Image (cartoon, rainbow, N blue to C red):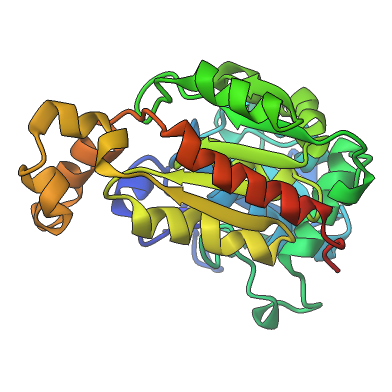
Amino acid sequence: MIKPYARREDQTAMERVTTVHILPGNSTNLPPCNFTHDVPAVIFSSGGFTGNLFHEINEITIPLFLTCRHFRSNLQFVITDYKPWWVSKYNRILSHLSRYQPINPAADGSVHCFPGAVIGLVYHENLVINSTEIPGGYSMFDFKHFLRQSYNLKIKNASEIEKPVLILISRRKSRRFLNENEMVTMMEQLGFRVIVTAPYRMSNLNRFASVLNSCSVMVGAHGAGLTNEVFLPDGAVMVQVVPLGLEWASANYYGDPASKMGVKYLEYKIEPEESSLLDKYGRDHPAIADPKSIFSQGYSAARAMYVDGQNLKINVTRFRKIIVEAIKLIRQSPLK
């Protein structure tokens, strides 16, 4: 029995993944084939943490690329926990990895026979490909090239963008910028054309990937929206605003992977005065004075406090220095 989802060590994710049963080779009374395929099957789940962009890219899309690229489209996807919206959202990626329409075994009802199958996907780390572990030596640069092909993205390097464009990931729930308009005004005064994008715009990757590909700089608070760094052109800058208590997660999920995909990285760690937690609890509360004590209570307590429980009012004067630094970086010679 195998649950074909890449992040096998995450118990919460695996609870949302249906088990695939593998029968012994000498099993009797197997039904006859309704369809006989001459290419192998790749069986994976679109369950787990789908619905969150980071997990969709991190645990399905990148592992799909790693597992399937060397088949050169000669494979058949069999998707368990089939979600039509997910298949539609990532249709361009699926169609560039397989020349056949995916099979939904729960709805198909037929017996499909294959010469072989890969069950489950290869997973490395957060938005990372360890090229030494892969036949052919794929890297995150190769993955980004694959995305450019799949979405027909025209801009390879940020140096090709004449007037600098900055995209601001605007959150609507937690970790929201409370003075977003003030931030936008400052960025425009520095010469950027600013695009403010809300979560609903990011759901249509066929359109949104092209928008991201036209941007010199992406700015956002720690969260799934920063996964869109995979669509930025090489040499672009990603500026992550790091809320209180989220330093480790910010670095490991989005900061450290940036350079491995040709994106320059800056981070802005907020001060307590820029967090809504200070107004709510006061400076002497452990949430402000001793974040480690909150994390010692377990992930749920830390998540409730720092991930779901704070919004941000940015010190625009201090933040301006980071944006000026981003301008300097995009004016430098392109990354090679």
